[in-house]
Amino acid sequence: MSIIDRRHVLVGLSASGREDALRKVAGLLRSTDCVKESFTDAVLAREEVYPTGLNLKYNAIAMPHTDPQHVNRPGIALVKLDKPVEFWHMGGSGELVQAEMIFMMAITDPEEQINNLKKVMQVFLDADLVAKFRNARDADELYALGKQYFE
Image (tube, rainbow, N blue to C red; front, side, top):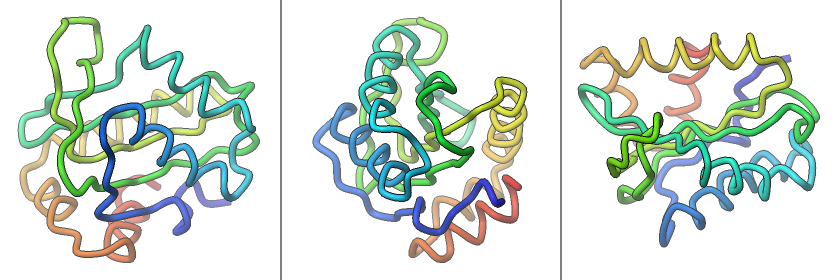
C-alpha cells in the first residue's frame, strides 16, 4: 500500500494558527481511517513538548507526528498552506518557524519515521526540488511530486 494517498494532499489550506493547521491536516488522515480518533489530540500534545518546525535552506516546513498506537496504517499528509503558520523549531531552540508546508506523518514503525524524515530533508535541501513543491498549483501536482520523491 502506498504511503502517499491523494486524499491526504491539499494545496491552499487556510489555517488561523498552528493548532488549527494541525487539526485540519490530521483530519485528512482521520477521514480515511488512516489514524485513530486519538491521533489529533496526540499530535497536538506532542507538538507542545517536541516541536516539529524546520527552517531549511530554501523554505520552512513542519513535520508533525505522534506515537504509533494512534495510527491504523502508515501515511503522510502533504499540505501546502495558503500563508505561513508559526511553529516552534524542532530541537527546542525557542526559534519560531514560518512553515509554508506541513508533512504530517502517520507512522507505525520508528525506523520508517527516520527514513521518511531523511527523504523529506533531502528534497528540501535542493533548491530546484523546493521550487517544484512550492510552485505546485494544485493537489494533483503536489500528489505527483510526493509520489515521485517520498516513495
